[in-house]
Image (tube, rainbow over all chains, first blue to last red; front, side, top):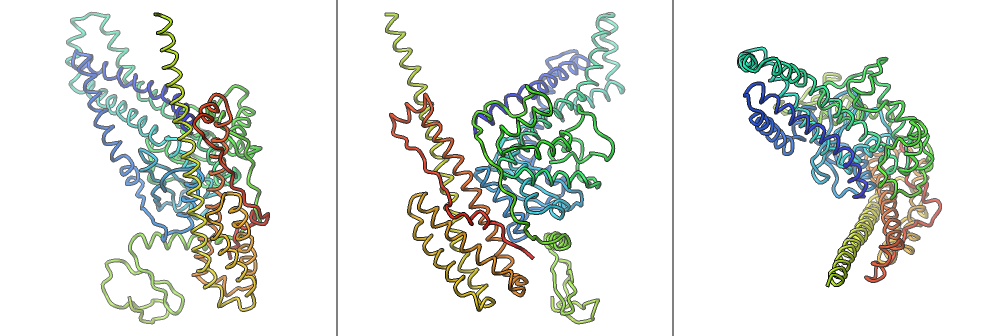
Length: 398
Length: 187
């Protein structure tokens, strides 16, 4: 298991290092332009990065969950979801059950956060909870747990902090260039001659380009991780069809997630900004094309990494590796789980009711069922001892 | 003189490799142990759920005494086999699984029972526990396979032989019907 994670990280480490170099470069250039001193700029870049890393490391998950307005649930709030997370935790061999959060949003999506497997959380939207059946939910949770198990969440956090630092530095640098900062640079260039003007122009161009390049690298890291997580999910559940059909349902939905933004997009199981009928170019997308992910999952002959790799190579041509070699070396033939007899689960309306009950409950509302069958939601601030049913007029005690 | 240094160098390198392999084997073995503990937790959870289930179901199923007794009996036998090895235990658990599957199949005939909230909650727990058993078994067997591979492959087989590592035993559930057991019917 360790070898797999390590080599998985090795490839991404190169990309992260690329972002690091870019940060150093931008710091140095900012220093040269504004302070006439590259080292000073480096120090500034380092401090900004350090502060952001510390905040990101200790508060990153809280900030993310807070931004998504996610709420933590326990076993009794939604037994089925909790059990499925526990099942996937067992299948993946994770030590601890991650915290489970619900986001009240009709757009189906999910993400995982946490700096290490012991302090991790998965969050899923109510839309997802309503749309998916047990097998599909298992596939999605397996995908998220794989992100935790493969330490993708930490890697994504590190690279998003790097990206954030680069963006902030570049943003302030361009602002300063237009207001005031230019005066100093003009002075220094007039004494230095045309050579320095060229350097200055190049530096400005780089400062403008750096955030875009950093973002592209960030997306590249994220895309690779998605394949690996899909393959792991198939291995855990032994049932790639579950995840495939979940992805299909998620892709069919047209609603967009309210609480996502560009920086958090790669964390979700599905790019929240995906627009219908407008294929994002490969470079700027945070996720591999959904149809391809589904196609790979559906064509798998077994549940092992080797099976996933084989299908991937069939699509992209031999030699294009998606699963690291060390993970493949440990992979052994694994058969798929047989499709079980059609299980009758709570139907769609039942599931909607279930999740809406959950959201009321999380908002500390009390639910009273009147004798006429009407459900009364009593807000937490309601202080009266009784409430009158608006439907039949009966007086119910609170 | 140089020859002595070379020999010492080789010995040190071999020793380091030996220690590294040994530690890795210990890691694998602990993973196997850990995985076994997981199965154990889930099987115990199932023993605990069954009396509750019988209690809930009893009032509705007046005519299914035999089915209920079979479940209770299989549960007790499985509990007794808990201290046995993986092979024997798998057999007892398989019996229990098929007895449970028979009971849950009979439930279909009792619409009142299927509307009982308490029963529905229990059913979800039981379904999930069955899933957890099969997932923990899957993880355990994967771990055993990897551990056994390490023990048999060169060069770790030499370290394993010298330090007395023994191959792990797979956990197979013997009853054929067991595979159908996890899916419990809702509605």
